[in-house]
Image 1: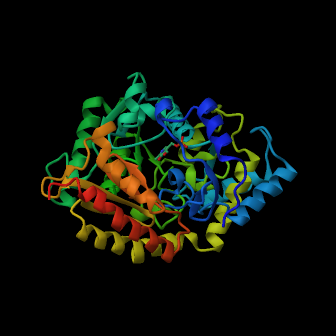
Image 2 (image 1 turned 180 degrees about the horizontal axis):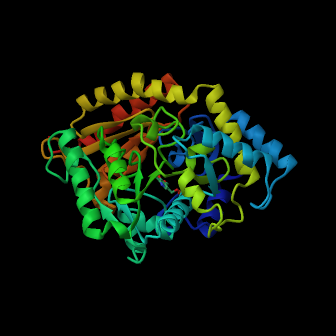
Image 3 (image 1 turned 90 degrees about the horizontal axis):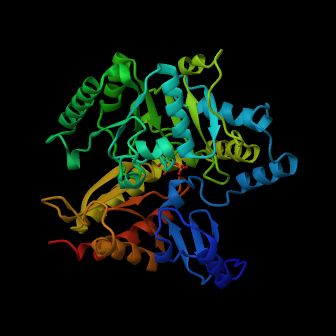
Length: 450
Ligand code: PLP
C-alpha cells in the first residue's frame, strides 16, 4: 500500500557502517529503516505502518509531508536556496513577522537559529550581556539541548557526561506535586513552597550574580509537568524584584502542542526571552530562534550583538515556517489540538488509567500528555529506577515493544510514556492510539506489585 524507495538492506548496512547516532552506544542499536511517512504515520520497508504518538522528537506538529509546506519548500528552492544573514530576505522577514504576531507581549524581534539548543545558547548570551551578570538558573527536571550552555542548563541525566561545572548554572527544583520535593499535599502548597525555594536559592546565590531564570513553560521531556496556578506569575514577580530576566523555553511546548499557540498563553505570563524550534515548521528544515522583548532588544540598538550563525534565518527554513504558520491558522490546527486533548486524549487516558495499576498519574493538555508509570500506586515507586538502563529498564522496554508490535510508535522516557501525537491528529487516529496503549499497558502492569 505504500511506496517503498531504495533497498532496505543497503540503507541499514550504510547506516551501521557510517552513521553515528545521537545518545547511543553505537554497537547496541538497531535503527528501524523508514521508507516513508504521511500525516500521523510512518512505515518501514516490510509494510509495517506506525501511528506516531511521539511526533518524532515531539516536532512534527502538522504531521508528515503537509502538502502546503512541501510546496513552499519546493518553490523557495527554485527561487533562492540560501543567503547570508546580513541581507533582508522576503521569507525571512515574513517568518519573523508571523512569529512575532503569535508570541506573547512585546516579544517582537526574532533571532533565528538552526534548532532549540542554539536558541538556548543565544538566549543565555543575550541575558548575560543585557544584565551584565554571569550566572543562569535552571530546573533539575528540564531538558534544554545538547550544546555547551544548553546541556549544562539541562537538569536530567543526559547532562552528566558533559557537566563541566563551568557554565555558571545554578539549579533548583520546580513544582511537581506528584513527586513533591517540598512535602506538599495540595497544588497551592506546592506552588507556594516551590516559589519560596526559588527565592531562597536566589538570595543565597546573590541576586546581582544572576542573569536569568530559564524554564520550560511546561516541562517537556522530563515529564510533561504543568506548573500549578500562580507559579509562573510568581517566578515572573521574583525575577522582576531582583532584576533577573525570565527565559521561557517553548522549544517543545510552543506552536500548538498545548492547544494554544504558546504554553505561556495558558498562564498569561510574558517572559523577557522565549526560545522556540520544533513546531515552528515541524522540523521540515532545521529552524529555531529566540523571540526578544523590546527592552532586551534595545540593549543591542547601538552595541553589536556578540553572536551569529551562517544559516541564521535560512531561506528554505523560513519559507517552511511561513507555510507552516499559515497552514496552522487556515486549518484550525491549534484548535484541533485543544479539542483532541479535551474531548479524546484527556478523558481516554483517564479511563485507561483506571483500568491499569501501572498508571500512577495522567497529566497534560492539548496533544501534550504523560502517563507516569509506577510499580505501586500507593508508594508511587517509579516502574523503573531513575535513569535505568539494561535489565533495569525492562518494564518500559516491554511496554514500548508491545506498542510497536501493535503499530504504535510511543515516546518513552524513564518511567513515563508521553502521548504527543501531531496537532493534526484526528479523533479516530487518537482513539486508535489509545486502544493500543490500553493493550500495551498490560506489559507494564505485569511489573507492578499488585
Ligand atoms: N529545549 C527543549 C524544551 C527541548 O525539548 C529541546 C529538544 O528536545 C531543546 C531545547 C533542544 O532542541 P534541539 O534538539 O533542536 O537542539
